[in-house]
Image 1: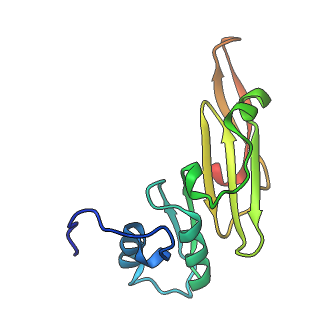
Image 2: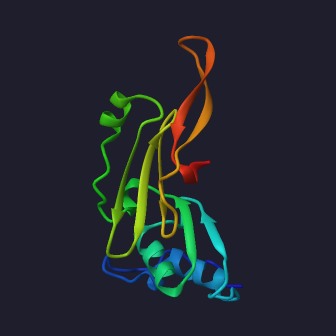
Length: 146
């Protein structure tokens, strides 16, 4: 076990393996059989474009929530435009070089996820309470949010 020893100095061009998140993830997966059917799900502290690309290169499938600033400037629609489209709207982009998918979905708030192995289809649906009409409605939901 490695103990956290404070913030490290790093430049913005560092590789995934050199970041704190990268070091933590690599230590956690070191005992996995890389050629197996493992799927790893991560929260937004770890998930980034660099992580998804690196894990794809070594053969590990990853899906996770992420922050908008960790999508390698993926041109997803703005929150304002998504809100105008209504609840259940979504936007997605694929980095075809690395086969990485980023999806932004409008539930109550915007929710962004990335994956190096999943697709957007088939669309599912989610039951949500609609306060305006005082009833339950179904809204579209991309596959890997289910």
